[in-house]
Length: 369
Picture 1 (cartoon, rainbow, N blue to C red):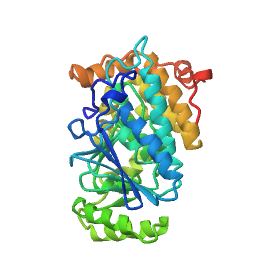
Picture 2: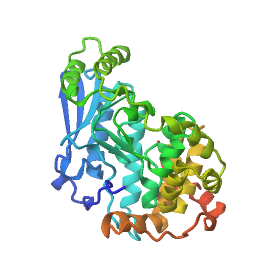
Picture 3: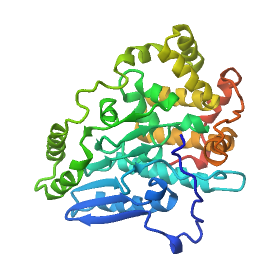
């Protein structure tokens, strides 16, 4: 969670005059290349960047001169560590959170529906908003530097940017486990979990990019073969088992419940070291966020990406109306005391009715895709 980035979002009125190149958009041969370019803040995604990427992606997608799109980050530490959200986003009188989430989710959908092969090179920290820029694309290449997490329940939010679509589609209850606990996956494990499609050592990435640009017939199949060949050359950590391998059956058993209280009950009754560790983690999270997230993944398992994003937009606005998000940002990012005072403070106090209300239509303000 501490990798969520906080800095002032650009004032919308005079944005055009102060656009920095937070994202570089270029054409290399017949390949559209998007480079996240804010290394000092771990390439955090802000509204300016969303407004640069979206029209360019749509143009490349409909353009006969473009064969594929590659997205990557600069600085060597992060692909994109999350959304750039400041503490007062969405407080009374601010429409910024409405706009930010709306435009971010529209971009996530454009990536998910992109007809051209879309290749995300997730070399480094990939969290929250960075997951939304990568996971819905056709190819996601992890390296030994990749660190993936959806840590939103720790700041009073939920794993958005389409998390309700891809997380329940991971094997068994793995997605729910990652969503509730914010567990961090690293390197090859990001691929083993099913979040990335390939694992390539980071020193081989520049050569791989050059070969992608040089592909004479860049069909999905040929791109897939090329990425497979780079994965075959990458033996780093190949002998190490998946970090959660010995716990997969525990996760499936312990996280199978129709309620968060049920999961907590399972963990308590189990009493193993692994179960106790997850209990401790969950006890620090926003109870409201945990309940919203559980239902989000339950619903999302049978919805299209578009319907999930519409649902998540409703949830984002419910979180902006509540108090846990501001308290989470304060505790994790502003005061950094890591001691949020959640309200309600226990799962029992979060009523099913209040959770259900978060999913209700916003009428004319609903997200339209």
